[in-house]
Length: 356
Ligand SMILES: CSC[C@H]1O[C@H](OP(=O)(O)O)[C@H](O)[C@@H]1O
Image (cartoon, rainbow, N blue to C red; front, side):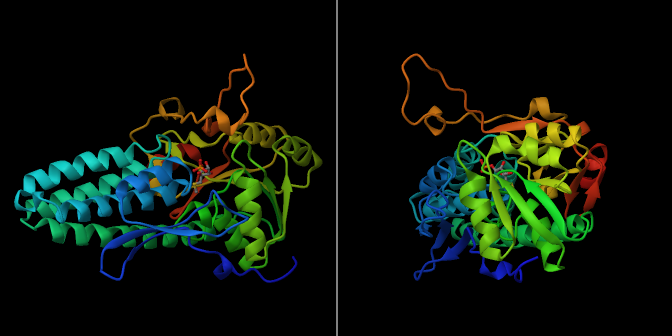
């Protein structure tokens, strides 16, 4: 493997920080501009945070979870500075409404409603204890920081469990971007790659370009090269020939929501890669922290699939031509070799037990 892997060269894509005046700010690396430009934006308005999530300025299930919790903190700060502080009930009711709008920014990744729910639950607990709105707002800003740190720690633990499954000098195929850019830091599927590479065990990663938004071409290829991991970019329709060639030791992908039976929703195109991996006898791993597992959803059929703007597929509309643009698909548990979490790797059928 060429060169030393150094994940410290990777930027952080989402964080809750404080401005000079102490006000919370959601700090984002605008992923729409990568790899051409690394532009950081600092948001104080929760509505702008919702727009950033919807527009994929920040993306990736764990990353939008952190952004969602930070957005609730921004909303609490705004309300605590507004006319409602005298009425704690009005403050909390308004924050609940803001949180509902934030949680609905994108429907598929469970991390977003999960993180917003954590923030609103903390707000309810503090309000019930008689804490004033400003104290609630401060606590929610701290919670967003804690959730980001917990995500990174989970990713590093998950990466180590996944690396243990790979042969030395593994050749890996991945789809979309489940890297550091999709999380608070380190990544899930790419966290497995980084953990294996840091121990000297990754020969090369093949990255699907991942149409129509190109998270593989623009983000995964860039991220891996930045960290010093050998990477080859391929078109999505090349995955079949690559898997048929026998060159791939394992497929490792992320997830946006894992159902209680182990079905996993991930970027559109993942299902096709899973079918091909099964056909050619290549292990297919889903890397997902337990915060991505939704035990309230019995199977993949119940996972909401986001449909996005047709212009992502066809920027210049053709008269008489309709476009279908689902952003995710569901890989059935039967095509998944193991689900890798921070608690270990589990057969899909055992994921509910793993998260209990
Ligand atoms: C580590 S979760 C990453 C997950 O999220 C991506 O979707 P999007 O880029 O639309 O946010 C993709 O499904 C990745 O696998």
